Amino acid sequence: MSKMSVTVFNKLHFPVEVSGYVFHPFQEEVISIESTSMKFRKIRATKGLRVGRADNELWKRKNPIPEYDFCMVYDTNPIYRTFAYKYAIESLADPIVTYLPEGSFGYSYRPGINLNLRFFSEFRITQQGKYPIGPYDVFMSHGIGDKDYWIASRISMYRHVLVPGPAWKDRIEKGGYKGAIHVVGYTKLDPIFNGEYIRQKREKPYVVWAPTHAYIHQHKGRSSYPQCLTLINEIPDCYEKALAMHPAVRLRHTGKQDITMQELLDADVVIADAGSTLYEAWALGKPVIFPDWLCKEDVLSHFQPGNLEYEIYSKEIGYHAKDMKHLIELIEVALKNGMRQPEIDFIEEVFPSELRGRAGRKAAEVLMGIKEDFKC
Image: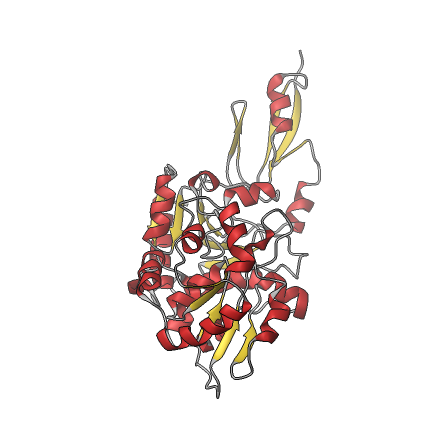
C-alpha cells in the first residue's frame, strides 16, 4: 500500500513518542506513513499532536512558547483575566524568583520546554484539561492546606515535588510516591517573616474570620462561607473584626484578587475552617478557632484518617467551638492563652520554624539543582 506525507506538530512541552516516531516539543515533523495503518491511527488519536494541519505557524503565533530557564506556570488561558488563583500563585513564586539568576525566569499561562514549576496536582490538571505533566515539571501546591492535593496518586507523574515540611513528605511517601521530595518551607509567608509587612496598631483586639472557598458538592460544609458573612456580625463590638476571603470568593465579592497577608499579620485571633489560612495563622503564632458546628461533620465525612485537616478536627487541635456563643467565649480564651503546645507541635511538622523566612531561597536552590540534573 502506498504511503503519504503527513505533517505532525507537537504542541506539548515535551517529546511524544508514538508508533516508533518521536515528535519534539513545538516542532513540526513530516512523516511518510500509510493512511490506513494502525500506526497512523495511534498518532491521530494522541492528544497534543496536530496531524495534517497547515496552520501550525499561526498556532505558534497565537500560543507563544515560553523560553525561560525557570517557568512559573499559571495553568490557565490568558483570556481568563479574572483567574482567582493568579495572585496566590505569584505570592508563592515571587519569593523564589528573587533568588534565581537574573533573566532566567518568567511567568506563563502554559508550561515551556525548560523547567516548569506548576502549582496544581496531576489530578486537577487532567480533570480540567490543562497541558499534561511533562518530564521537566516540578510540583508545588498552590496552598498549604491538606485537601488531598499532596497524596501520591495525584502527583505520581511529577518527578520532583516541593513541600513545606516533614508532615507532607511523610504523607506522600506513605502513598508510595516514587519521585524526589524536597522540604523547602512555605514561600508565601517569606515577606511577613522578613519584615516586608508592618503590623498595624489597633485600638481593640483584632479578630479575622478567614474561610476557605465555598463548595457546591457533597460535604460542602468544609467551608464556613457563606455563613460567616452574617455570623461575624454577632461578634461583640469590643473586638475589631474583619473577613479575609479566599481569593476565589473575594474576587466575586470585590473584583479584587489580593491575598490575606496583612489581615493575618494584624490578627490577634483567627477563625478558620479547612484551608491554607489555618496553617498560615499558626505559622505566624496566631491562635485559631474552628466553627465545628458548621464544618466538623463534613470535614470528617469528606477526608480520611491521615489527612491533616481530619486530624485537626478529630483530635480538636486548636480551639473548637460548638456554636456561635461558644466561639465568642473562645475569643477571650484564645486572646489570653494564645497558641497551646499541641498546635505549636503540629505546625512545626507542617512548616518547620527553621525554614520560616528562608523558604524562597531554599526552593530556588533546589530548583537550580533539579535543572542541572535535568540538563534542560
